[in-house]
Image 1 (cartoon, rainbow, N blue to C red):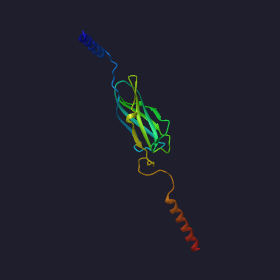
Image 2 (cartoon, one colour):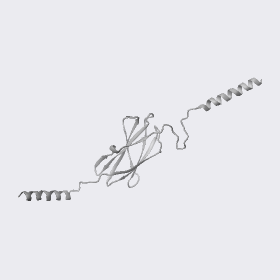
Image 3 (tube, helix red, strand yellow):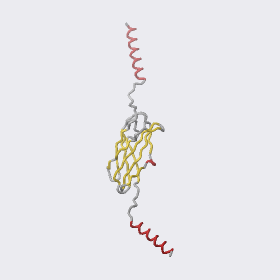
Image 4 (cartoon, rainbow, N blue to C red):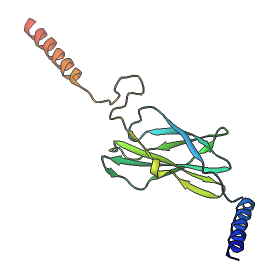
Length: 164
C-alpha cells in the first residue's frame, strides 16, 4: 500500500511538472558598451547593451556616480530603447562634477518578471581632464604661456624706453 501511494505521488508530480509552462529562462546580458571611451564628470554617456533572452519587454540602465567609496544619490535610472533584435541603447547625463567613477548595471523585464543585475555591476573610472578624444586638454585655464607673453611685452617696452 505504501509503495502505491509513493508511486502515485511521483507520477502526479511528474505530470504536473510536464504540464506547467511557468518556467522561463532568465535573460542574459551579453555585453554593455559605452561611448565616449573616457567619459568625464558632467558628460553624457551613450550605453549600448546586447541582451539575449525571450520576451524582453523593458530594459533600464542604472548608473550611480561616486567619489572614491562614497556614492551620490539618487541613482540615475534611464529607459533603454530597442534599436535591434537584442540591442538596446540609452543616453545618460552625469550630474556631479566631483565624481571620479561610476557603477552601472541593467534591470530587465522579461515574461512579466523583473531581473536586477546589480550583483554584476561594472565600474568605470571617469577621466579627470577632457581631451575630446584628441589627446589635448581643453580645460581652458591659462598656463605658463601667459607669463612668457607678459615677460616678452615688458622686455620690449623696457628696450624701447632705453633706446629713447
